[in-house]
Length: 362
Ligand code: GN1
Ligand code: MG
Image (cartoon, rainbow, N blue to C red):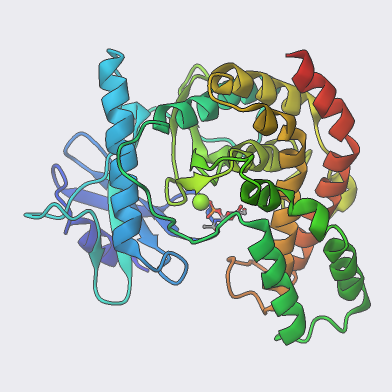
């Protein structure tokens, strides 16, 4: 979309000053994000919400409103002086308290751009430790949120559902890709681990694993750091919902502990970085120790395997379906992502014992 249209949409929200420009921002796979510059002292982030995926935008924005209000309240209570850089602020429409706008087809929202902050695609152990502390604190801070949050994508991290979606994709073979021998071979191998990986849902049914409010998209680039490397703020709150703590622990490591990007076609570069694991686990345990149950703690190594596995299943299903969910940049993009995550799953699984030993030593 051209910048004139973007500026016009941003102008429907209650911004300070005049809007002076619009440019693409970030590299999310679902929503489209733009930086809106303005002359009133702050810039903004305009997002087109992918409403094919987030079908209930009202619920989505209500969740985010409740989460940001609760985090803000905690920051105020702790006497913090940098609140506007530590929690996102969504801007209502002019003359309304609604934080989203639609033309009936596309859906948009606007938040304040956090100044002097940056995101990273890779992190060193020191930053992973800070990230672990921050995500643990995020869960701890939200433990007493009074609002009950809805599932913006129902059963988002339910492995049984993701396994079913893969088997549906196999049955339909909509893009005719299952006839490629390597594809069929990977599908069979992936499916053979399905029972093992669906352990969380079984523990939940047995009543030994709780759901808590989690972020559910703790990719390393969903965290903002200040100039000195301190974690400022957790962003991308679309998927904050009740889930297992495995979501946040596992998805961070899936992106941060991989030696390469999730879509690197050269899978010989994929590996599981134990230094990143240790630093993150240490930070996470420091903030999450207060609420984690023994079952949750014991299964953190499983979580580190589950997320590359689940992501492999999701990319592979999308590949079979003909690339209907994730943005792709070339035809075999989801295939490369699937192979990459599969290798990461195997590498993480090979380190399970070592992970367990480390967590017990903390
Ligand atoms: C999507 O939009 P983005 O890039 O933050 C996806 C995550 C996946 C991730 C894989 C709503 O996140 O679950 O882990 O891509 N978000 C949704 O990179 O499906
Ligand atoms: Mg996201």
